[in-house]
Image 1 (cartoon, rainbow, N blue to C red):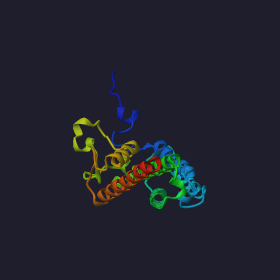
Image 2: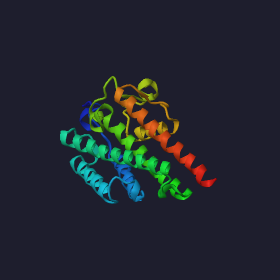
Image 3: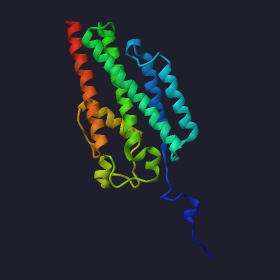
Image 4: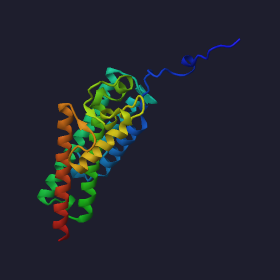
Length: 228
C-alpha cells in the first residue's frame, strides 16, 4: 500500500510570513550610536551618552518585543521603531547643522585637516545610517508589514519590483537594500536604481541628497582652505 506524502504539513506554507533578520538593522543602530559618541561635543545634540543610551533602550525594547526575525505587527512596536528613527534622524540633522556652522565660522572642530575630515566623515556616515533606517521603516509600513504583505504600489520601487524576471519568488526588500539606497543617494546625489514613487520618498531622498552635497561640498572647500 502506497501513500501520498503530505509536504504541506512537513514544511511551512509559501504564504507564511518570513520576517527579515533583526541583526542588520540592530548593527546599523549600534554603529550610529558609536559614531555619535565619537563626535566632538560641539557637534552633538546632547551630552555624550544621552542619545546613545536612549537609542539603546529603544533598540532593546524592540528586540524584546519581537525577538529573532522581524514579523510581529504591533502598534506599540511600530511606535518604538518610528521613535528610534526620529531620534537618529534628529541627531544627524542637528550634527549636520552644527558642522556647517563650524565650517562657515571657522570653528575649532574644523580648523585642522584631521579634525575636519574626522568630523565631516562621521556626520556624513550618521546621515547615511539614519536615512537607511528611515527608508526601511516607512516603505510599505516597515519590515514587519513587508513580511506579511507587499503592496502592488510601493513607495520605493527596487529593480526586482520593476523587473520581476530578475527576482526570486517572494522577493522583498531588506535592510541591506535600504542601506545601499541611502549610500548611493548620498554619493550620486540622485536616484540610481531605486525609484521613489510616493511623495514622502521623493522628499526624503531629495533632502538626503542636499544634506550630503552640503556636507561634502563644504568639507572639501574647507579642506582646500586649511591645506593651502
